[in-house]
Length: 365
Length: 183
Image (cartoon, rainbow over the protein chains, first blue to last red):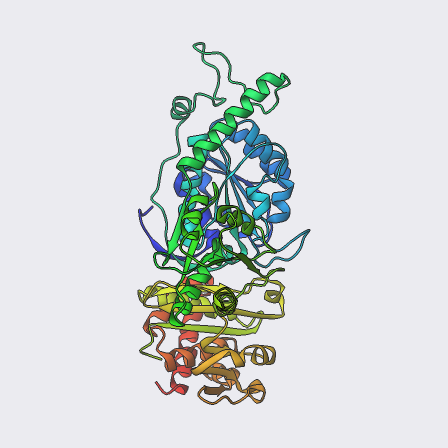
């Protein structure tokens, strides 16, 4: 068990190995392309023989998410992963996790939809991840990795945030990041928490009732509407704290930008190159990459909108995050969308064309 | 091409020809040589018999986009790949194609086109199944994208241990390819 190793790994493999190193207690999943290597890697590593981490292929996606619900209720660091169709099946369980205020990690390696769609990369589950997905007034903390290193690093970030706020967290990746290999440094090993440590750190957890306290009840059900409103307002207050403290974004060459690209995940990765190409053509393009899709970096975008003449939002979907960018821009500059659907991934040159065309349109007086 | 900081390569052919594995061999050789590297596969049903491809980018700098639409060098092993990707090789670039499909490759000004009878070369090296390694040898010989000495190490990682007896024949195939490339 070496501390730091640089290796060449698929995003899915890096995520699985990072989960073991983080001291994850359990993974419950069901195979689906393009994320099956998560479960395959965990099975090959057999962490139940080393760290004691449980790895289980459940009989279905709903079963997997409810195993996560049970593990999370016991204060364990538990996770599941899937792609669009499987994530849809898990929505009921995700809403229950949110309602019962349970921390857990859900990973969606997106493919093109709707329906069974295609197994090729897509970013069409943005709305599902960010705007609800399941029923009720709830939020997930949503992290968007832009490469394999992020797949390794976001496991600990997601778990840490989920436990800090008792809110489920999602890593929203896509098929390109799941399947590609890049150089990655895996995170350091951390030990799984002991039963005593869990009882001490998470007084809400169902770890067996000592005589010194009353029993812990973990449920999303509350039939007294006054109590339910109080609980709901408390949850909303917690979401406001998350928005204030945990919004993350990454700026690339925005200081002198005249035009702004906004993209997340693999798209943000590809368009760094577009920014470089545009600058070679004399157009001062900058890129803002939301790292957290919820909480959304509204302020960071609003600040940049003051200095640019237009914004182009590039997504592998029909136009989802663009709605949040438009809210942030507040109508001050035109915000356009460029997307490809059905699993088609655009090249840096294609986005350059779209950006230059918008630039010429905006600046032709 | 030897002086370029980044070399973007494509390997394309039928699923089962070792296209993704050859890409991995190249990628790990680059990793062991201390380079930045990305390997982006096609992962669809093409892996099960249609056309498969892998984009491998090797760089001295951080790699911005692992997905590109044009390439510095390409190995094209079947007719479908030639018609799809021959035009994607940049001017000044290298196109290595199998001689059985070379007639489909449009001669392009400024592109170094090498047509190789990979099956015959591989057979001469000791195994017809090492044909894709011959082609990789041509690409490495011509571009110096990785240090050939790193390839044996890479093969040890990419091939499962039960196939480590095949490392020698793969290295012989690689060296035949490099000889064809004139290095």
